[in-house]
Image (tube, rainbow, N blue to C red; front, side, top):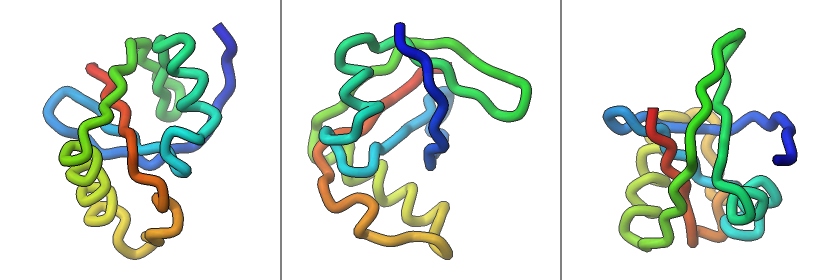
Length: 92
């Protein structure tokens, strides 16, 4: 498993963390998840290992983007998410 660290915007939905890759399915960390769905999410000194679930349903992707837009409204730019074809769910 290739390991690297990258900051991501996220939203919580129950016990799931929802991630929407910038550049959609063209994003490099997303392409890596397609090869190996194991993922570690970290905040500060805490990390959680899990398995990512790829979501390609247009409605679910748009719903996730709407939640990101609401959470990060002061920093939001639609250009970050011009390709809206996937999102990633990570169970906690």
